[in-house]
Amino acid sequence: MSTNQETNPLFVDPPWLAPLAGYTDLPFRLLCRECGCGTACTEMISAKGLVYDDKSTLKYLNTTAEDSPLVVQLFGGEPHFLYKAVKMLHELGFRYFDLNAGCSVKKVVKTGSGAALLKNPQNLQDCLQAMLEASGRSNVGVKIRSGWYVSNPNYLQCGKIAEDTGAAWVTLHPRFATKGYSAFSDWSHLKELKQHLDIPVLASGDLLSAQEGEKCVEQTGVSNIMFARGALKDPLIFRKFLLARFDRDMNSTGDIFDSAKEVGEQNDLAGTVIPHEDKDIIQEKQQLIKRHIDLACKFEDEKRAFLKMRTLIPRYLNSFYRVGEIRKRVIESASWKELLDLLDNLGQWLQERENCTNFDS
Image (cartoon, rainbow, N blue to C red):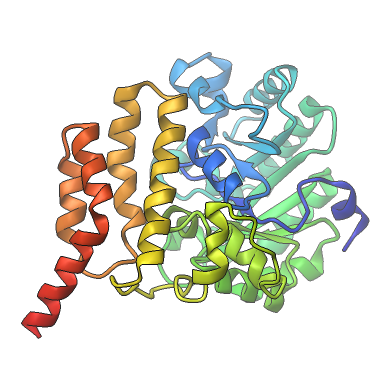
């Protein structure tokens, strides 16, 4: 482990929660921290929106003392806006910042932001330099892809630019921007970038289970990983990753989230669905969802919390067989009572679907 990693609190064993638009708000970040997440990122925030005091942008900055360390991820293609945004955030007490140079969504790249920066390495450098000057310290990182075009993999060039400019870390999503989220992440790019740079390299993309995360670290030597979609399905992925890395020798403390030690082996393979008769796993999901609801109600108004949880809960159910009807009822629920009744009766619902499946077969 390099000295940089040893002295930077971001680079300890717990994995990161990746920035996810529409998902990594304060309640979800706190839930993931309770489940073993070390560093969390805000949703991707527009630097220009912050400068113009857009209230819909400022809401992404809601945080608490427990929400630490927190990385604010910004997007923008104009160095002066990034400078002003980081300067403002730094004065408000935010310490860590990340430049998004990996988002391939059309409305982002058409402004020259996100992955579009990969087509203009000089502007990428200028944007990073502006953020570093505004932060007053080397607590700025950048998230990149393998390149814009498959024919032009420039992740080594962009990674080196980041390091030479003074970035504290580089996160690589090893896909090309033109591929969006299709095809598979190429871990060989992660290994090559790690060998090419002296600063920490983080892995992102297709890490849908703790085993996949552990395998990625072992095969590429990256400094740490970010969980994204895997965390949406199972926030316990962070704890399970740590248990897997340390031979699952953590002693149970009685905390509900430590049940991962007993069920992690069954509930942790990407693409694996869970038998309905496993009551421990069903109970674990119920507890996670209820804790998420508690946090959402604490930090959001009741109506907003309800609407958000109504759309998030179906993701927690993706691990089970034949849950289309249950997911539909959750999404269509009209009150907290109806939603909580569905949740309390989850085991019964799943068992009934299992019995119907067995009968039909």
